[in-house]
Image (cartoon, rainbow, N blue to C red; front, side):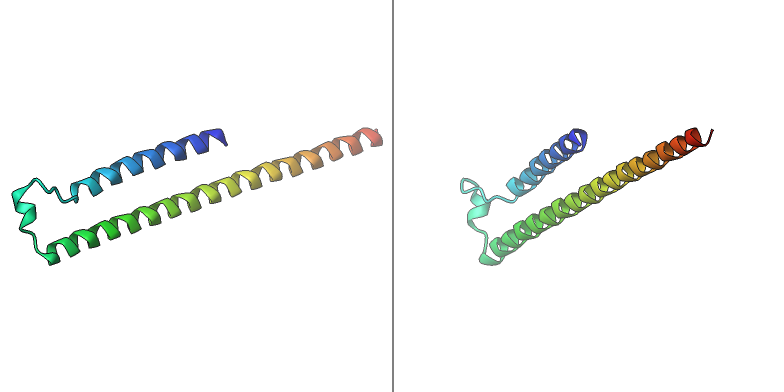
Length: 100
């Protein structure tokens, strides 16, 4: 379980750093003479791009969380199935021992 959480934490940190690099590339620098001549439509498209990136990031984190949850469920189910098989194996050994 610790291995899965450390992997997910590393992936989340990596994804956050990459997304911050993309978002910082869309920032308007007030010292740049070209950015002061931008129109409102350019700024609106810039804001729209930021919103799209944030939504994509949230969707990616949600899908990753869903994947980890399903992986955890499968692991727990396999462990329970193994315990059930072990329980019946022990019962069969006891029955065989009593019959002899």
